[in-house]
Image (tube, rainbow, N blue to C red; front, side):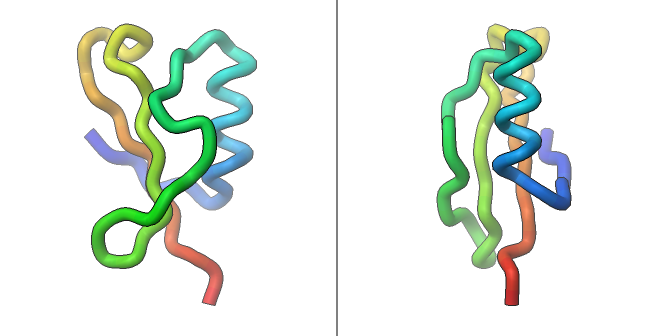
Amino acid sequence: MAFAVDNLQKSLDEAAENGVKLIDQTPRKGAEGLNIAFMHPKSTFGVLTELCEHPEE
């Protein structure tokens, strides 16, 4: 499952502060030029969750 966010790093930081285990601590390049990061399924009821953001142009 993927969610589009406006500020990926801020979203990751907030998730980690709230106890969510992250696979990616910082954004990385993904498909179609998006910045992406994943949350660990152990923290999201078994669902691999992706956060994605369009890079600044």
